[in-house]
Image (tube, rainbow, N blue to C red; front, side, top):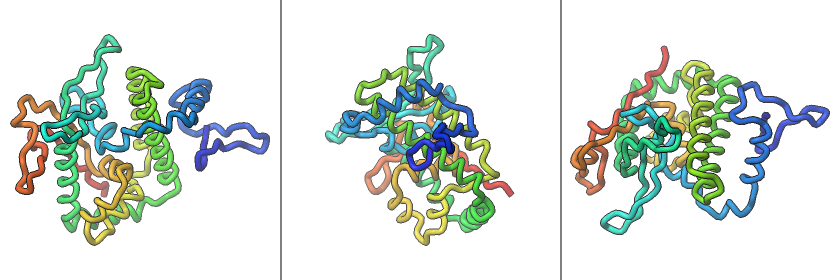
Amino acid sequence: MREYRGAIVRDGDGVPVAAAWPPIVPAETWHRLQAVLRNPVRRTNEQMWSKTLLAGVAICGKCGGKVISGGTRVDSAGERTHRYRCGSIAADGVTSKSCFHREADPVDRFVVEHVLERLSQPDAVRSLTERSRRNQGSDGEALRREIERLEAIKRDFAADAGAGYISRNEFLEIVQANDAAIARLEAQMPSSTTIGPLTELISASDHREAWIALETDARRQIVRALVEVAILPPGVKERARLRLPDGNWIAHPDSVSVTWREPAS
């Protein structure tokens, strides 16, 4: 079914209009889940998915599965830190492979610095600006809106999983179907369509300040559009991260792979 601003689009007879893309779940399942999503009780829980940059965006460098949020952990300084882990399920359909569990901040910092460094190159800004101007068609915009809607659904189900409304396995199954749908939509986009937040970022005079001003959802869209990120099991702690001169930690280059999506000519 098609939605516009959160409401189902209906024809002159009040019948819901079918969307052009394949459904993620059957209609009856969708209606049942909407009852859960719209329950005001569930809104008391934080939407954890939106707090991490790479959950659902990066892949596991060992098995190719999606990276998901690994929850939080209190570090030695008493600070609560977010973590990533491999979200793949073993052949039994129940057991998590868990190829790795890693602190999120050093990995995020590595990816962000990679993106900002690349954007500092004059040729990158020029080529991205040109492709943005070439690809502002209505087809790309409609697909972008649908991707944003699916991202929002994913955040909602993350909150449901955190509140115990759905099981962990149910959540992972929904996420995998959701991510597959997003991948199909991205494949349908006009060549190298640039999404709105990226247009704002590349047109800014100070990319770092512009990045800081963006919401996490916008940052996730930009990372998804610009780079392919694979997070690897570091093996030993020394290969997981490096300390920067300012005291912050950044992921070791050998433990994260960032591949730039070069604009099509």
